[in-house]
Amino acid sequence: MIDGYPLIPEELPAQFKAAMRRLAASVSIVVAKGDDGPVGIAATSITSLTADPPALLVCVNRTTSLHALLVPTAPLSINLLGRDQKMISAAFGGGAPREERFRIGEWVDGGNGLPSLAGAQANMECVIDAMLAYGTHSIVIARVLRARVSDGVDPLIYQDGGYL
Image (cartoon, rainbow, N blue to C red; front, side):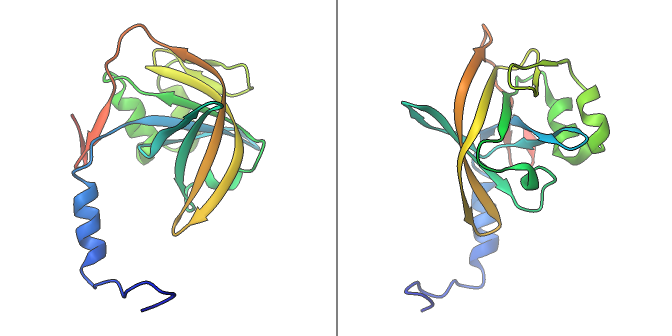
């Protein structure tokens, strides 16, 4: 036992990754303010936290370019992708250099000084309320200040290394 927890079996990390590949998740683009303009990443680990106040949980790997920009009170733009926005997901998932990512898709100015993706399933303008470090990631609590929702519901879903 370590710190009151049983030792992790050697095969558990690989089994856990295999199990998580079976978990289907919607894809979002998370945007923060960088010194040289907006920085964005594709993310599947976003979930609602509470409706009062409206808030989300966003889990971000500490090795991403976005992570250093995440501090309490910093603005965030969270854009829930539609099924027809696979190219945007691929670009922000590392398929395009950082400086080219915002040239893919139609981006408009959001009220919090960050771009929002036109045609997304939903756009949310947020501010970071709190953060908690855990393992390789940080858990970000983002308070939603404004939300825009599209008419149709047709989310981009990612599972087992591909889109459904």
